[in-house]
Every structure is written in structure tokens, then in C-alpha cells.
Length: 204
Image (cartoon, rainbow, N blue to C red; front, side, top):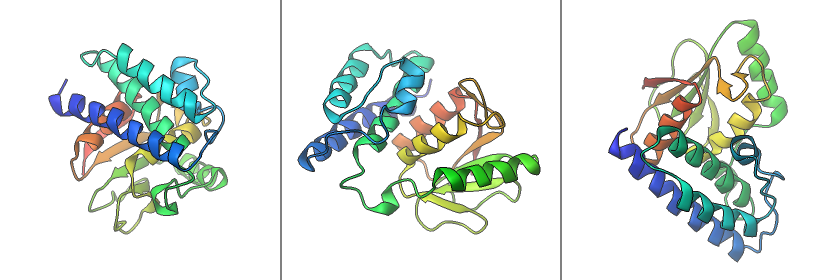
């Protein structure tokens, strides 16, 4: 496993701690949604509030084997879910998921009807010609739908994708591609984790 992925995972642990602290300062009590869906799917644990999220982050840090690809990916995905679940009071809208469940279901229906893939564009400059393109970052390329400026918002997309039998089979993604654009440590870890879930990995 690439050292950049491990370093990226450790950076996400640090980012999660910061977001939890900011949530506490904003007097946030509950997570949104309740419980955090990816955490429950991947660990069976129910995280309903910021205090429990803080405790669970510490549990993950103690028990994650960074040399185990599956353990690392599961930790990254759950940390993304925690970040998204605690930040809703203090982050501006463009740093949160800009896609409702109803909008996502329309996207899923279009992809299914036309046998297209859903492409998660991680700070790419361009968008593929084929498929439905969901963009993370700034300056969305043409032929793409803006999701958020930050990649942890993909947690919300995954929660929706796992409700679709076109985009998932159990806890494995189907018909989903992660396209890596600008490389950062955090993006490396998230891109890797999406591949562990079953997404096709490409370079943008």
C-alpha cells in the first residue's frame, strides 16, 4: 500500500478531530443524520451525537491497522461520515453536500436507463464524455454536477448509492468510477478507499 495513502488516512484522523472540536464550539449536540449511516454499515456501531463521535474516533485510531488495506479503507470511510455528520452548523453550504436524495435518485434513474456509470470527479480539470459526472472541488468542468468543495462530502453520496441496486451490491459499489485529479494526501486516501468499496479507479 502506498505510503501516501497511509499518510492521507492519518491526516483524515486529524481533520476529524478538528471538525469535532469545531462542532463542540458551535454547540452541536446531535449528528446529522442519526445514526451516521456509513459507520453503522461498516462497523455496526450507532453514532448519534458529537460526544459519541469523539469517542468513536479515538476507538478507530487505537484499533486501525494502517498496514491492512481493508482496515484503513473502513476507517477512512467512517471518518468521512463523522466529519460530514458533525459539521452542519459551522460549514458554509458549498463545503457540504449540494445534492438532495431526490436529486440523486433522478441521477441514478438516468444512469440506469442509459446504462451509464456515475463518475466521482476528485478535483479534476475535465469531465469524461461518458457517464454522469459528480464533481468535488472548485471550478466545476463542463458536463458535471457540483457536489461540494471538499471530498469528505462523498460520504453522503455513498449513503445514497448503497440504497440503489444499480450502484451497489451489498457493501460493494457497482457502476461507479472514482477519477483522481489534483493529488492531495486526503484525496489519495479517499480514492483508495472508494476502490476498496468496488469503485473503478482512474486518473483524471
